[in-house]
Image (cartoon, rainbow, N blue to C red; front, side, top):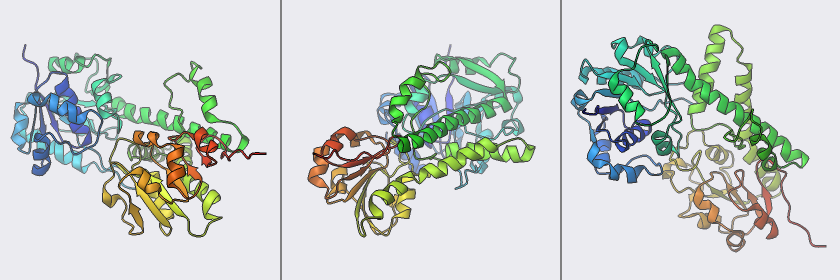
Length: 430
């Protein structure tokens, strides 16, 4: 039997990672995007997004992958995924026009017997309004994570599939494609699937907000959140895979979008969205942690400190600075002397002329009075206390994600601040 040809309309982060993972599963994959330059770059094996394993897998499976800016390439596809990244504004509101335009464009080129699958995040009710035969129209929940997109695309936990009639057998070509990933397939109505994606993110936000709230209490009472976490993981009602890391609020755009969507539905249907509003407020509050800590330890005591910032992206292994806590911090302290470094963020991520972009992490810390590690990039783990003793003038490190070895820093007489425990002061010799 000839395997179905899989098409992806839209080759930004979602579409590209999904296309490459499909080729890795042995399918012929065709990717369409309207940008000639982007398509040429991809055909040369150069992805425009940063993800671990992505360049290597593109090269390994290049014989199964093709990219085109000619819309007619979709005519040879048995299944076409609409895989446009959904833009959001500063309030988390989605702009669905790019998705609607891509669906209109793709549907004119697709065969009449082809299956159309919406992979983008949309609001409940969106898929059912589309003009495509109902038994050939599906909504599939995507659960990619920036920085882990290839891992998630290759080894999904389950497929959540919105169908016109979830009681009907799936189309054979879609069944074959989904079964190649060896995970459960959960058919449900369009609306249930659309809300399932939001539900997953809401439970994640609940966990993040709870961890943030309790970690903040730890910082004031002498407790250490890292000591508490193992006890939570051994509770079956919480579990070993629970997201228990405290952070600097919610960032990246995707979770904010879903919070905004739920709040809008709560207002429209007069349901209780109070807990969601509380999560939003908690996120805003925790985004101030780095600035408040910097203010208490440095700015209140030193008139013109030299500040080093490592990390600009909202998380590691991504180019994205969407709602980045680091950028938010820099906007508040831009009048000070700042040197920053990030291994992936573009130079225009920092527009203020007062901020100097260093060539590497250690150079950024030279003669600094204080160091803030704002993104947990793995390469920052190699920075030692001895490195900072040689490089820095001051002895204050603010490291929310515990990237550096706090114990070593304390031994070298640094003041060390991190999420989930009180600020640690150097041990004074008696």
